[in-house]
Amino acid sequence: MRKVDLKIFVEIHDRSELSPARRKLVEEAEEATHGSYSPYSHFCVGAAVQLQDGTVVRGSNQENAAFPSGLCAERTAAFSAAVGHPGKCMEAIAIVARPESAGAYVPVSPCGACRQVLLEYEYKQGTPIQVLMSGPGGQIHLVPSVAALLPVGFTADQMKG
Ligand code: THU
Image 1 (cartoon, helix red, strand yellow):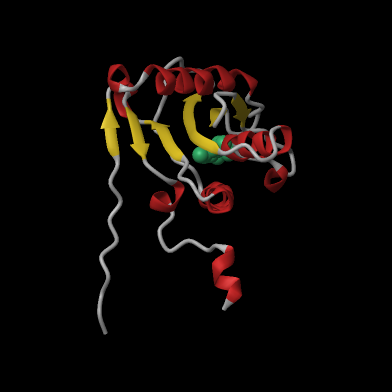
Image 2: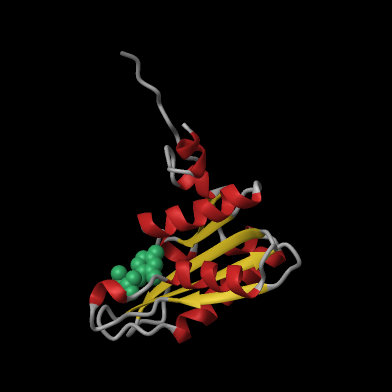
């Protein structure tokens, strides 16, 4: 038996340390929280995907009385980008969250299903999708790729045997 130690490196940035483009992407995600439909959790999540040509596509969580029928912000953004802009690579996704009643953003990180969906697009395009997440105290947590966020993830390679 041998053990393999897999590490994730998360960059913790003050907002002022981000490039203007990345700062703008986080602001787009914040704007997107206003489109959240979250009458059950009262937890507003916004996401913004930056495409290779600079286009930004927003998403927000959309809940449903039949709970599992709802969808997270990350997937609404990624699917919307894929449908509206086929063939364009995704360079980065910013994700932020705030409780409905509060003005401040709180830490968030994509659920397993969203990581899997983002991994598929990263695998398909062959280039990394940077992930920026709201962290505590207004900081931004940055991971360089989806694969880094989902180590030992499942991709189509494995179906080739
Ligand atoms: N949610 C997201 O949209 N993204 C995340 O990364 C975490 C969770 C949503 C799903 C649901 O509408 C609400 O937040 C509470 O789980």
